[in-house]
Length: 173
View 1 (spheres, rainbow, N blue to C red):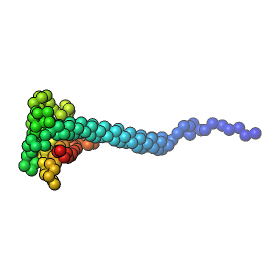
View 2 (cartoon, one colour):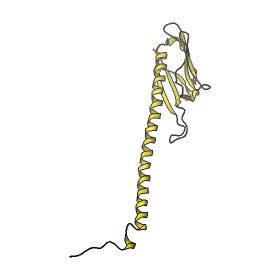
View 3 (cartoon, rainbow, N blue to C red):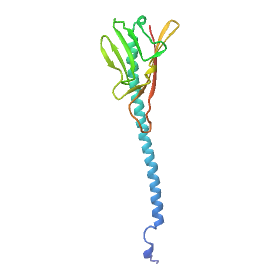
View 4 (cartoon, helix red, strand yellow):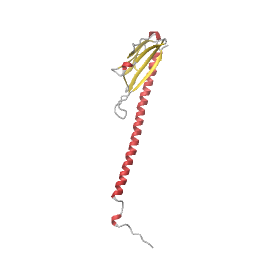
């Protein structure tokens, strides 16, 4: 019968090299997992920012289109080439002006019936108002183009100071 005795006093537990290797592997794994988690949070945040800008642009474009659809085509006053505003008479007999204001960084509307209101929400600013509206006559049809850049007011982070360009065209009838 063989009787095993315990290890000698100097050989109990883990060696220093084993501990350093284990600690090194653990640190590498934590860094990799932390990087993956950080990347997923950034991607989620970037997606939310883009979704906010897209939703805001869709709201503004819908309001602009509704205003332009209510326009009387014979009373449309377009800028020559490109400009920051467009004015027109409405089918109900009023007058509406749509403009992009560089000072307030907003897209706004002034109407004889409803007064003045901003089409963009707070926290969302508009850039590049110089090319806000274009009017083109093509085959006896007047086409109004709207072009604006939205910035949701966040700077820094992984997206930096980003803004998105939105374009729409409406044919006057």
